[in-house]
Length: 111
Image (tube, rainbow, N blue to C red; front, side, top):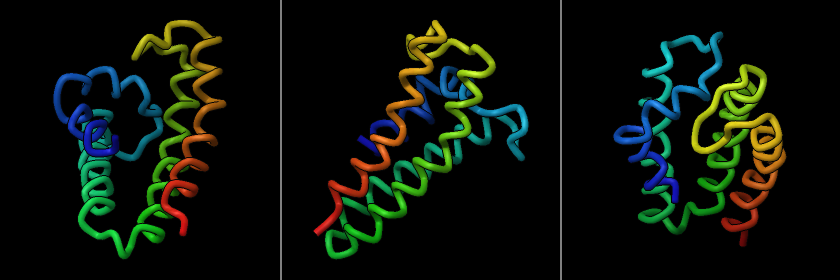
């Protein structure tokens, strides 16, 4: 899933991912999307090719998901529509899903 999402960041969904980049991000929205896409591909690939490091990589993935959470908040606060999140309710529900995604990253890579 991480590799797929990373490739989407670099290709067809790139414009939609820009809606999630906060205005205060230290780089331009396109740069942030590209960098996060590369990070997702790298993390997903590491989970595949480094099974002995699965737990450590899982923690890094969870930290990555926590690091992108402000982008989801920015999408909600800025009322930016992307990926079918075209209402405050939908964007708010997505915010509730982020902690679950973090927990899933930790759970699925635990011993």
